Length: 140
Image 1: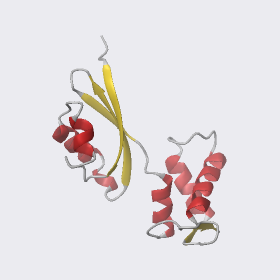
Image 2: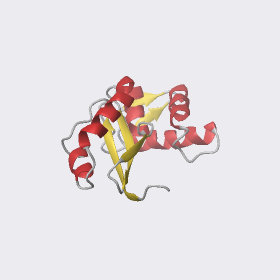
Image 3: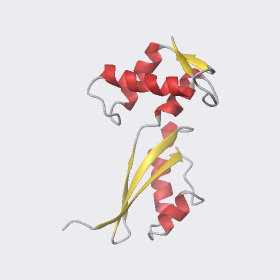
Image 4: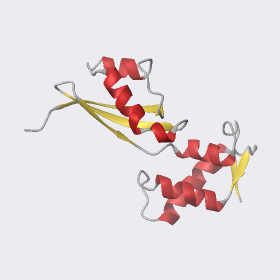
């Protein structure tokens, strides 16, 4: 018989650096999940992506066990890394903070393809290009 799901928690955690402090501790603690078990499992799974922010969906079952699924880093984080900027523009219509090439956008789209709602690579590239424009990153 399948376990009954009591909660689904969505968090964004830095890869390899999960610890019981907020936001992880309170989110898991209120459902009775062993926080250190999650931290150790998450850090082991994401050790090779050190420094990236990884979205994670944690499913908590009635017996307080859990499973988690990691997703690809947000497009904005990947674009900031590709453009070598600290943050997006305050006013993206007027200010330009950096630039990325279409090849870099295609590479990001290939990486994000599993999490995007796109049928092909061209549509995924348009989604990533739209995110870049809204951040004030120029496309060359």
